[in-house]
Image 1 (cartoon, one colour):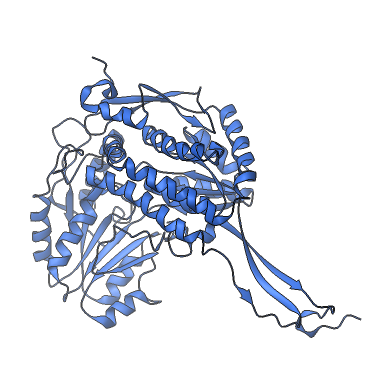
Image 2 (cartoon, rainbow, N blue to C red; image 1 turned 120 degrees about the vertical axis):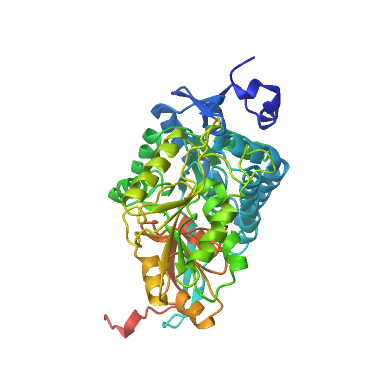
Length: 511
């Protein structure tokens, strides 16, 4: 029997997604790839799933050219007609939602229900984008000059380069792709090198919709690759907008390369997110929220709760209850429907987990739950709770993409709000309280400085209808709902003179 999982009967469903032992990693209207051959591994057992051939730089160049050529046709299609294509993409994803969710679970390592939920996010954003296709546009503004009209015109930026991370290999592309398409852009996608099969499978679904409608497949191109392809996209003046999701470290390098050519960038980077629990909080909401937000996706969400700040009056009781809940989390194969907690994505993440725990101990922390690598195949570690650290300890201020929760004890509201804001990132935050005055102080100018500011819910699990993103080292970008569509378009202020006179603004006379 072949060593590849795809050839084992248990995983034969992978072929329903059009996958095989060896898969082309380039799509630009036709499939190809002649670069490095990489093997995708399953984090739950570290066994090889299948292989993907990445793009060469020559294939990247060809793909950019074909994608820009495809834009000439796509931009001429009325927005509601583009929305119809996006609707069909959503329907195609619905038909494959379970099998595609299974692939996400197998290749990324998140539990099955989260894998399916991630595909559902793409479907939901498609639905949202369909409605948006009949709504995008600018206002007509009052002109101070008689016989003049002042309007805002919004046009697509052109080619949107989308670089996504391993932890959401479907949803983040979907957020960008559906909105960008509706706005009249074409897309070039580089997924994470460790989840290439998901990139190929999604691209096949989208390509079938485009081809069925006699549209150029290059409208949604893909180039699997590593840092070479990502760097090329960041430096390429033909890529009008670079949407990058990943670490703050790499995001800063991308931002500088894009800025060097005065290009547009949309950054979704790290988060060092906090839940703050006040003395009047409903603990029946706090405990499941803290557990879900810190343990979900094995601590590998950008919105994962990494700091749990507890009022001193209830610190010990909440720690006891959360630790008890941690020990009841069902750990197992991510594709088992009863599993709540799967593996880390890579062996390197396991090393980072161990290093962070050691640093926390050296800085005065006490491990009250977890702290060990699990003795089983795959990249499994115990979800971990650490108490006793100072709020400004170096490890507390470091985002480690693993399931470690640092519990801090605070005394006053001012103290808690300040601790929330003192980290470099500004993605997600939440308080638990019944005090409405405190709620509005939290939402106000002296409250949380994050892009996501919640009350009585976890830091993770954002809905697609709101703009998703954060401040400071999180990058400042916004994706998905609200007016995030503006990131994918350029605005022109247009003054139209329909009179026979030529009055100047501000009453200037030039005669």
